[in-house]
Length: 158
Image (cartoon, rainbow, N blue to C red; front, side, top):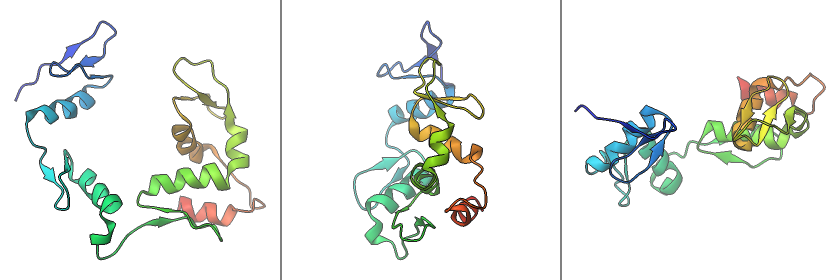
């Protein structure tokens, strides 16, 4: 199927069905598939349907975890912390935001970049939200061996 992509004056792709806009062609490609009919991956526990099998699996793990034989989660390696999530990236964000707060706060700075809320002092990259910043900060943070969570940091980055 040869899809035609329409663009706005600012260069964003626009859906000819519902006026949804996207900056990337791939985002618009997946959006347009929603208008083609039922999504190909239905949940057997509810009426939800998904474009990608991986999204269905995440849905089942988060919404219907009681139906799984084994609930795989990513637990925070810090002693006394009970945080766990079905997504490894969410655990990393939690760890940087909570357990490496001193180091991540030292990287954060106000930004003048349009559309961004914060900037990384290490590399001057701007971020639209703090979640993006914390995920990025995991690459810029370099705790030394004296940091109280140094061993947990090595475990989470392994």
